[in-house]
View 1 (cartoon, rainbow, N blue to C red):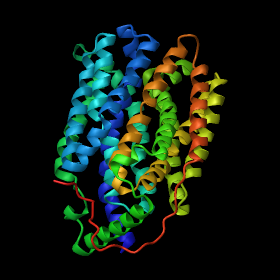
View 2: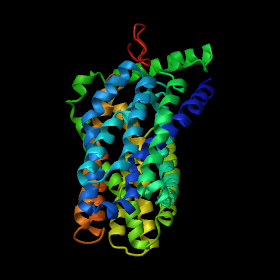
View 3: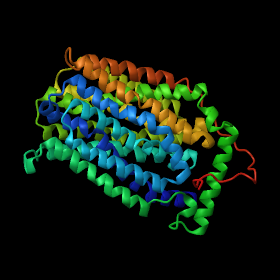
View 4: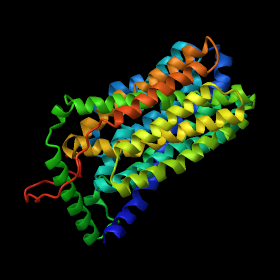
Length: 435
């Protein structure tokens, strides 16, 4: 029963969530490809681009926790649909940017519109998967970011080639054509997504009953291990440690992803389309690495080392990239960094949800994700500042120090082992939103 039900849930839930995140991630990082033409057309300096690219995460930070708490109250289906429609419209509106100020405002609004999507999906996965299954489920979902890069690189490069059609530049076509699918998918969410197992008509009665009971037992174990309310978890030292780890991790991950097209263009001298195809290599390897690392983490039920070791490998890759100037060497070093930097994400979030417990998950995940994502502001901005005085070497050394620090801190996180406990009869099943 267990494998059959979880396999059915995985087939129904994960592919659709993956499609949604591909659309979200494309709208988040397509500015990296747009910058290949946009910076020159609008006269944007490296520092201006780095600041604008990073301002996304300031809007994200300010609206993340409220958005996740609203999702828990009104339900995933309606709130995720709202998020997708608004972020798609804002992303398409980037085609109207003419000044640095407009660039800053729209990047901030894009972050505010998307706030709550990623932590909301992480919370949503806890409604469907017991804790020992979440690492693999999260890894499958998180591979969407890599798929967005694998598809987005060549597609974005090809769209840039539409410049001149209908009086629009290539980067204007890029924002328009990659923003509209998110709006359409928002309406699909209203028809496809279920708020939780209790409302899933595609499960029969026995499957639904088994899954709800399994999640109920899982909740009892978590509540026994972590007895904290959402308000108090925000004051816990462990929560702030996880915030710091995720902050340092995102400094490097977004420093890499938002500058990678320009790095590859600089070292290879290639066209935007060729740069798009080159970017496929590190993210294809990363997609495989994420699933392998998460699967091994689930089999061993170990999280800390599966976070720390990939991050330390990423630090080595960034350090090597700082001293390399050849296209092949740079691509190899950054591929190692990408695998390590993104490969630790599923074990990190599995470790986080176990540390917080279900009662604190909505506020805790949102807080860690929102504060941590401020690293997405710091990383791109500092690389833009450092690049004004030279190449990318100083920026890569910064990313190396950041990700190495995150890896060492991950080893200090205390994650208690699960222990079976008696199940209280009166415990409520929390896997449907409150109305």
